Image 1 (tube, rainbow, N blue to C red):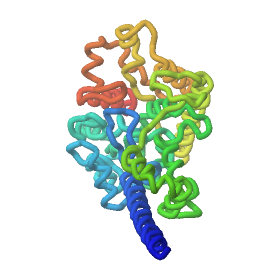
Image 2: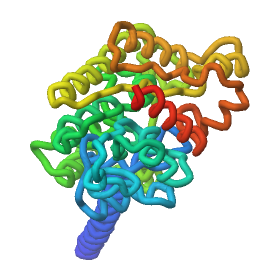
Image 3: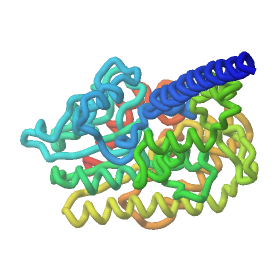
Image 4: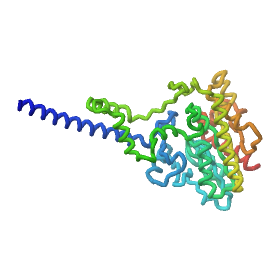
Length: 378
């Protein structure tokens, strides 16, 4: 009996130590996977790779040096932003005797795909005219809602004479991917993923919440059999983006099964128009000239349609529906430039666009001259 009791005691101690060791390893791997995924979210667009999507980036900029370094290391050889979130080394204090002007918008306003930032619109405008000094306030992935936040919270205090928004594309592409009416269609990119991460942020800090979720989802048997360890190690280090239809089934990007195209276009166009109206009225109250340009998009030009297929894709139809409803009245401050290059030959179009919405160096130069000739001179 004593031998049996001794054996059982030894076995209990052994399995207790083994279980505790497995638990510590599993918990460590769990928190390691969380640390690796706090800031980076896999982009739905392959050419973007990983984007820095710290919550700061959704609504305003951080002055924390390590976060700015992450933002500035996205793949361009030239610096992206200073501490104020202005691109290309241009700041309001550099205006001299000129009137101050800002370019708001997303990645096209910023100058994505330009070989150097001095090939982007603000720099070019500063070279070809002398009335205004332009500062780049475009931010990749930002939409009209975020533009309004930046104008109202930051840009206004610099007392500019002119603000131009190069806008529309990100609102439309993000809402088309989202296919979800439970949050506003004009919410920032990846806002749903952020919401899933933080949940009850007022009640608990990140680690306490993560620890609670760990104990809720894990079972002693699962940890003992290494199910949780294998799950943490092989799966949770990837944060995959999936798009779902209204029926809850994963869908491909070009598919819109269960997606109410007409209703969503109507809702989104109203939200974009509200955001643009807010920027216009706010600017007017501060005696600032405001112009919103619905930015050119390569694929919706007639010559591209005829070359690719007889019918435009569902996304292009959606884009077209939204744009027509945004610009459906006499709002003179909104300029529909989506088909600005409709008279060009397709081979000339390819020299202007690097993809469906971003320009080449030549395209940015042409766009800046269009702004100068069609807006600034008038």
